[in-house]
Amino acid sequence: MRIRLHDLINHSLGNFREALRLRYSLLPYWYTLFALSERDASLLMAPLFYHFPTDERTFAIDDTFMVGDALLVHPVVHENAQSVDVYLPNGIWYLHADWTFDVMPSFSKLPQVYSGNQEINVPVDLRTIPFFYRGGYIVAKKARPRRSSVAMIPDPYTIVIALDNSDKPTATGHLYIDDYHSTDFSTARLYRMEYTSSTFKFIRLEGSNNPDTPLIERVVIMSPTMTMPSKVYVSTPDGKKRDIEFSFTGPEGSRSALLVLRKPLVKAEDGWELHVE
Image (cartoon, rainbow, N blue to C red; front, top):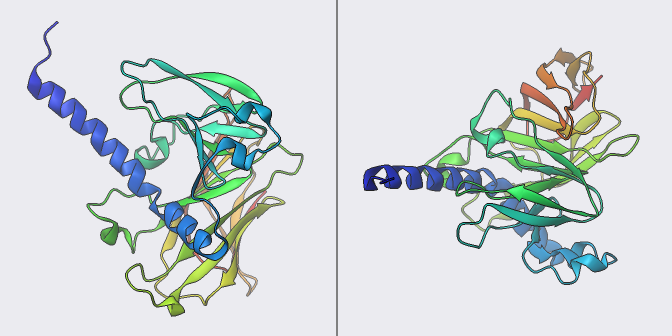
């Protein structure tokens, strides 16, 4: 079967665009990792044994790495590969579902969820970049496609919460924000994002809240066991409460539950709490 050059180019360009969208969407996470590394010399990228030093199976693995504490990546490096074998250390892991969180507002595709301490086989093609969200961690992203990182600065955040599998699921993460173009740290803010007891909030660690801080437009919560909530609402220190629109899809076999909270209309800063009941 002959493949026209025009079709091949268009197909390849589509793959490039999707990969770049994924890369750009994770810039807030990368930016935060650099800020944390400047403070404590933590590694942005590290082999598995660095994060799991008691797991002897990780010692010889050189084709998989961690990005920060929250993401595990296994790049496809062999020509014509149709699958890759990925070792998952202790914990719970959610397979990123083909850019679902970035370009499919319906969130119709549930992520696969896996227990750790096992090797799994992941089908791949030219569009696939196998990576996993680690249970117990939170990643801040910006999902709107833009032509440059500068154009992304005022865009709202999408917060991805990957819950662990404990009796009372929790997750934590960080978000660093500054003016993105100078070495003036007077505008810098560092927050710890925390989900515990079905409550999500920002805790300010450094700096002051800024009126130009972007909004959070979406919160995505993944869980292997979550059930349909009766309501979701935001509370503020003045005692006010406001219901939040949400959609929920329960776990199906090896796929996790997915709770999507739309337009909570809060800024990426402290002073509010989001409750799931």
